Length: 451
Image (cartoon, rainbow, N blue to C red; front, top):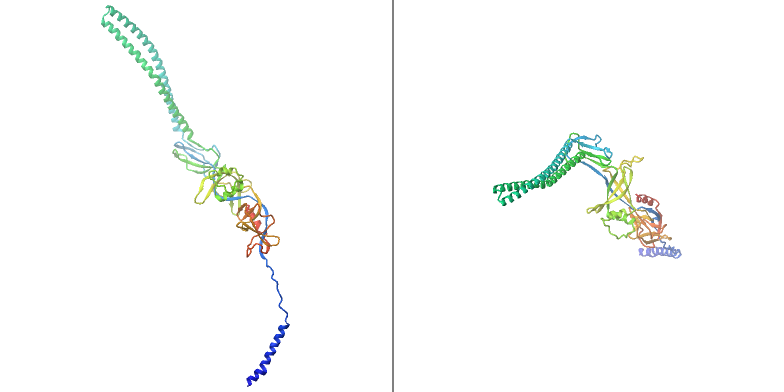
């Protein structure tokens, strides 16, 4: 009973009072405040599209080689009598320098022998001429004698027919006539041999004259002369050494021109060529005609040598294309020529462009003007821009030039457009953006793209 009274008299009244208080509070509380939804802007990095002029450039690397090389190869064998004291590795020798000279004794003896043979052959020819004249005079005499013998034979034949001459006397006259005829025939036969003997002797003189010319030429070849100004690369000859024919005594490199064969990818070279010509981008590259095509384009070449943090440069010209495409690397060689490479020292501390230097070569086409953007701003064939209401818009654009980290557009992108660099999430056209200008990116990219 106690518990029942407690529940009835204490607990229930307290619970009723609490419920009343809660109902009073709820009934007198203000309704909850409504909060309207507001669109949130996505923060993105942007740059302002600016027009710049960029020269399409492709960079390759190669080793410097001399355009001309002279191998001092002995044309004749002989004992070395003289070697130029300047013939030392690295020494620059002017054109016309006598590099070495062989002993001329053997060559002069050959010349003397040939001259003696010619004189002997000419004397023999003169002897044949005199002999022929003597034989012709003897023939005249023998023919006169034959006429006498013929007349005597005719007379004895008449006397024999008349019976006043014996047969033996007639036979003797006939034998004398035959003997004289034989003499005449012998001289005539001898005379027919003289033209052949003369021709043989003339040909023999020609052979001796050829031997003389060869001996004189060998004497001239015994002296090796430098045909152009060159730098000694190697030399392997000393005074007193016997030099065999065909043996190389020295090698000299020309200093008037230097060549660099630069290996470039077909894609990169094609891009530069298409930037410098109006041909369709669908034109295939024909390596057999690429040299002619390059000569017709306004391309320039800049050769650079890296010296630590510094670099020096030379201006070159594109000369030709190598003989084929490297199937393993897919590259083609472009030969660049630098004129007066060794003498272009100038007023600075620029070293001469010498053989073996590893250099990079920049081939440049005529500059193109257009809107320049970071390459990363290109999404396939679209550019993301911020419109006047700070909303995301898609613009279809095809770059006229992609070089390094930059892309150049000649259409579709108006100057002054705000181009989105960072990708918002989600990428939805019309998305509200909070653009922040990046002022440091483009100067750096432009400096790199101009290299």
